Amino acid sequence: MKTFFLSQDLWDIVEKGCAEKEIRKKDSKALLVLQQAVTDSIFPTIVGATKASEAWSILKDSHCKIANTS
Image (cartoon, rainbow, N blue to C red; front, side, top):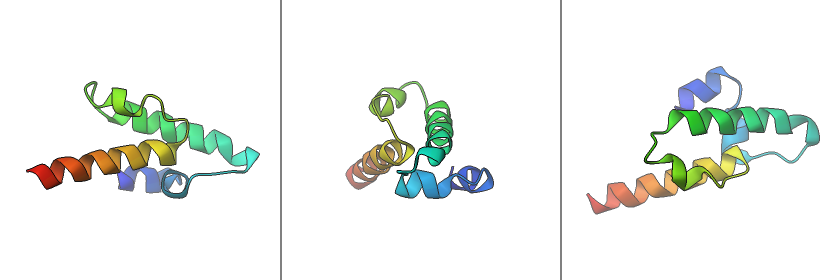
């Protein structure tokens, strides 16, 4: 997934978030891509995120918890 965001010039937005008004559109685009990339069973965990970095953090934390329980 990271490669896709890098190819779209969106990785900085996903990883660090954004504050500037002109970057909000890119953040929304990155959030949309994240929402579309996850399965229906995972989507509810990120549906409340308002920024790509927030959704990414939720996914990262969820993955780490699952990996540590295996």
